[in-house]
Length: 438
View 1 (cartoon, rainbow, N blue to C red):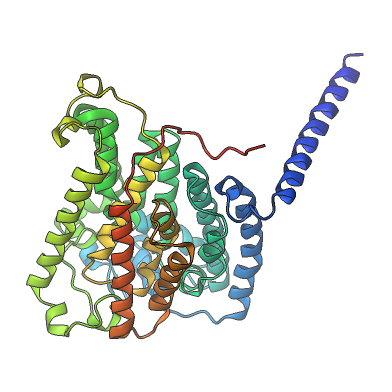
View 2 (cartoon, one colour):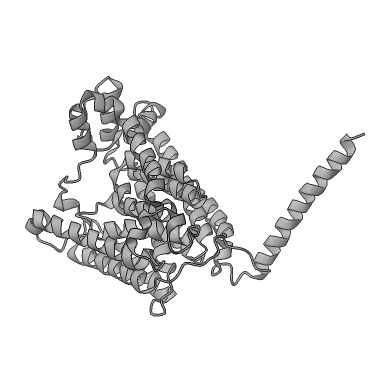
C-alpha cells in the first residue's frame, strides 16, 4: 500500500524537475538575444560548447596527423623508473634529461601502462581528449562562479583555437595535465575547501613547475584569509606532498632530484622562443637580461599586491595578523577576488618569462577571457578585446615566430596589464554564482 504513494511522489518530483527545466529553456529562448551576452547563461552555453567540442576533438584526432615531439621522451624517462632507476641524473629521453618533478613520473607511468608502453598513440590521444573536455568543464565552473565574462567569448576559448587543440591531442605535452590539476585546485578554493585546494595545487606543481607562477597569488589569498599562523598549515600541506611524491628519488640522490626537477636557472633555446624573437640571441641568453626580467616580475607583483589586491585600508603587514585581530573586520574572500588574484599572478609571470615555447600557451590561454572582461574599461570595447584575443592566437600560431609576432604578443600583454591596473575596482560583496533573473 505504501508503494503507491512513493511512486506517485517520485513521479511528481520528476515531473516537477522536467517542468522547471522546460520553463528555464523557454525563458532562455525568449531571451535568446541576451543568451550570448549575459553571464548568467554561462552553464547553458558551456554545455552546448562542450558537446560541440566532443565532435571537434574527435575530428582533429582522426583527421589531423599526430606530431611526435616529447611523447617518446616522456615514455623513455618513466621507463627508466619502471626498470628501477631512481637517480634523477640517470633518467633521460631522446630530448634530454628528465626535468620534471615526481608527480609527472607517476602520471605518465600510468599513461605508459595504459598505452602499451607508449606505443598506442591513438589511445593516448583519446585519453588527452577526455582531459581536454574535463579541463573545459573545470574552467566553465570557474567562470560560472565569477559571473563576469559574456558567454559569446567562450566560443573563442573553445572551438576557435587550433594551437590549444594541437597541444592537447596532437602533441600530448605534460602542460595540460598540470593545468587541469590547477583548475581543479581553483574550483576547490572557490568552494572554500582550502586544504584540498592547496593539495591539488601542490600536485599540479609536481607535474610541471610553471604552476608556481600562481604561487604568489595563492600565498596572498592564504594570508588574507587566515593570517600567517593559519596559512602555515596550508603551506605545510603543499610541502609535505612534494616530499612524499619525491621521496623515492630524494632517498637515492636528493641533490640530483632537486637540481633537475626544480631547476629555476635552466637555459632555453632561442630557436623555440615565441616572445623574444625580436631580440638578438646574445641578449636573449645573457644573464643580465634574465635578472632584469626577474626584477620586473617581482616589482610588478609587489605593486599589484600593495595597490590592487590589498584594499582594506590597512598596511600590507596586517596580513600577517590573525584576521580577528585586524582593525578591519575580516570578510570571506569573494570568488572574483580569488580568481583575479590567482590569474593576475600567473599572467604577470608569463609577461616576464625568459622564454615561452609553443606548448606554454595553455599556461594562460583559458584565463585570457577573464583577464580581458573581468574589469570594466570604457576604452576597451568588446571588439577591441576580441582583437587582442585574436592577435594573441595569431602570435602563438606563427611558426617559426617572427620579430613582428613576438612584438604583437608583448603589445597585447601590455594592453591586458594596463586594463588590470586601471580597471581595478572593489570586489562585489555577493559571493553567490550568477543568478537568473525572471
